[in-house]
Image (tube, rainbow, N blue to C red; front, side):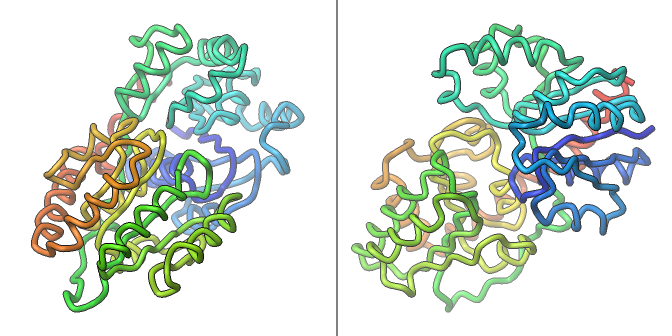
Length: 354
C-alpha cells in the first residue's frame, strides 16, 4: 500500500519533521509514503529523497492560495488510498479537495489566538468534520481542539510525536567547556525568543558561564539578534540559522530551553531528549505529557523569565544533575516517544481506513 502526506512546505518545522520521520518509519514497514507540499521552499525534500521518499510540490508561493492548486492536488490524491495532512493550510486543502481516498487531518499545535478571530471556530468545525480521521499529537491538543470547535473528542486519535532514537543519541561531552543552552525554534511570536533572551540576561547578571545557541530562522530573527546585542556580550550567544544536521547540534549542547507561549509536543524537544539533554520548558501544551518536573528537566510558568532563569541556573551549576536528567530524558523517549512507537500507531490507523 502507498499513501500521501501533504505538507505546507519543506521547511524544517516540527510538523514537517514528523511527516518525514513518519514516511521513513512507514518505508521500513513496506508502506511507501509520498510527500507533497503546497510550497516548495525548504531543505527537507532533499533529506527525504535521500531516504528513498518521493517528494513533489504544487509550486505555490503562498500556502494561503491553496485553492488555486486544487485541481493539481486532486490529480495527485487520485493515486492514493490514504492521505495525511500536516499543518492548518494543508489540512484545509485536503479537506476541501474532491477525492476518494481516506483523509486524515492532524492537530500538531493549538493556537488559541486564531480562535479569537470571529468565525474561525465555525470554519475549523466545518473543515475538520469532513475528515475520515483526526489525529492530535497530545491529549491537551485533543481536548482543547474539541472544546473550541465542538467536534467530539472521541473522534480524535491521540498519536504523540516520535523521533528516531538511533539517529538522535547521547554523545560524550567534555566537562571543561562552556555549557551550551540550545533554543531550537522558528522565530515566530509564539516561541517567545524575547523571553529566552531576557532569561539569558538574568543568567549573565548572576555571573554564570554559558552560551545560548538560537537555531532556526523566521521573521523575528533580526529583531531577536538586535535584542541579543543589547542584553548580552557577543560570546554569550550564537545564531547559526537553520541547521541541517540536528543530531550534531544536540551533540554540542547541554540543555534544551523552550520559552514558548503555546506548543503541541515539540519535535526538537524529543530529539534533544533522545540525545540525552535535559529540558527547561514552559509547562504548556503537550510538554508536561513528556517532561516530568525534576526528572527529565524543569517546567516553568509561561511568560516568567525569572523562573526560566532559575531552572537554567540549577542545571548550569550542577553538571551531575544535567547528566542524571539527560539520562532520564533519553529513557523517557525510548519508552514512549520513539519513531517506531509513532509509526506503529499510524499504521494501525491507516489499516483501519484503507
